[in-house]
Image (cartoon, rainbow, N blue to C red; front, side):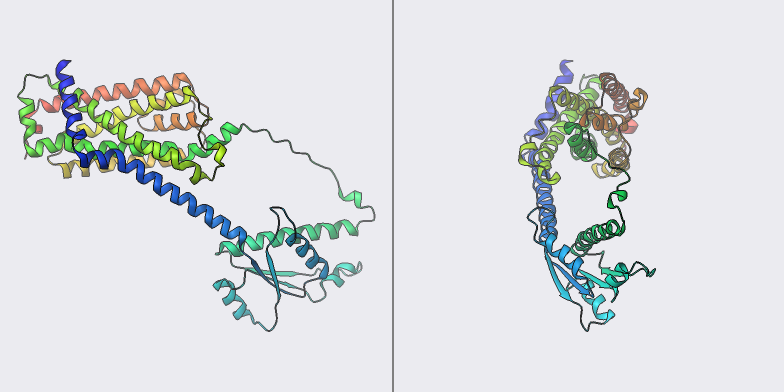
Length: 404
């Protein structure tokens, strides 16, 4: 056990005394993620604000005064439903010019009413149905937003006309509904977090292991220093344990740096209010479970990276051989994040990578069990033990360790 501790300290000192590695592995990931996601959140907020504050340029032809008054009343409202309209008459503009101006953004919405629109509506004996032609550019957010706002007023206008046609307007109300939604605010917030966080966490764990794992074993093979280590009277199993645990500790620190960066930038990215940005919805049990999942999963990942690195001849080859496993991790994260609700079946949590990601999703929405957490931890430790055994066997093989 003392030899294991020497190997562990050797690897930790090798990385922690290298300023470049400390900067690139521990500081840059979290800082860059915080800056990137914060900027993304600010740009999304500015984009939404720009769309909502945009003055909708509406060209009309034959617009009835009754409908125009509704638009103007909505435009003068003082609440969030207020429209910001610039209504102009559509005169002497052919269809090609209108289309070009819609595409360029000079016009947001065009409404063309039948010339006898209100006459047809008010004539009870007239069975002709008047039409409204609405043109907009659904490829532009401002135009689509304007279209949605204007059609809401148009639908309300149509509903009032239908009520006026009835001899007894109360007959129009066949029934009434009252909605009383019930929601767990913690779970609602957690659902938004669960879409993003599990995928990013597992990716950061793998990225952290990839950044330091190949150099710790394949790099020593390439430089020839692994031979010096192997001729010492240290058991191969202790060398394997020391390598895997030290790499796991370093990868976990790197992942935690990225994790903290996400937590700090998440409020801006999700457009949460200032009072809801501290993620205080989670308690000690949730954060403890997350840390246990991270610690056990990173052992599995570093064990895998260590075995692949021991097989490779050079750092470059090790990085290439690890990439397919990294892509599998990306796929697992995507499937879990954009799939169905977390699966609660215990057997699912035995699956490497998928089980931890599935459990993390459940933790973030408060749907997890201690049994599933234990299954993830125990299974990850068993897989790690298998990797350590394989790594020790590889250290004993001169053909593997000294191949050129």
